[in-house]
Length: 305
Image (cartoon, rainbow, N blue to C red; front, side, top):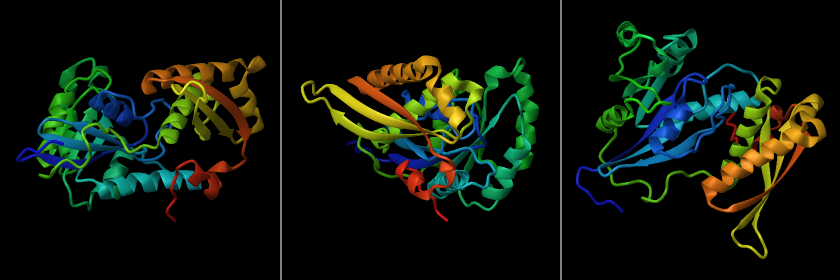
């Protein structure tokens, strides 16, 4: 464990509307994949914790779900997760997109969640790689200064890794002095079952594209070592959908889509976990599962009414 004077450790909540690049940013800051990534809304559904270890600081990132409107229990749970992460954090990093500028949804996040908050807020302008002319950043920075009293504004490209070192140095200025809060070999508090379920869900999103909405969930029913080969991990998981036709799409003709989803998930899990994987997948229809509080809890979504 690091024992250094003036060491800093603190929580940083990554906040923004859906698909601004929060998960890509955290994955690239940590140098490993914790949050799944897709262009669909509600890809991240609950707070994902990731620990960045530096010689003089430990930054605990909280990748929050995109803040959005919705009436079903799942969406309310997603928003509650984002809000609780902001309350837990020492610093908030709000993320907007350079190529889109300030949207109505961005402004609503400031007004509804940040305006009365008593902690430092850093603005991160992501996706600067999409700008044809970097001089377009200057008016966006000036506009941003009029929106809120941001402590600092940092333009970055999460996907290209541009200016991430600068962002880390800025965040270190605002987290408190503290001994490390996590062991040096720990980078997350995710349960293994949740992590596996997220990887499978990502492959569903990737391969079904626009045919399947965000209302897909994955439950890992069992996880066990091989009886003979202890380096073999046997995983049995269920993919839940809300409609019968969605089940057919995920299974595909002669089961080919489900086989492809399983193959890609297995290969990535083998790489990330360093073990051989035997993955069994089933698809079940669960009508209105987003309103089923019991199932939401099983899936790891803790609803606070």
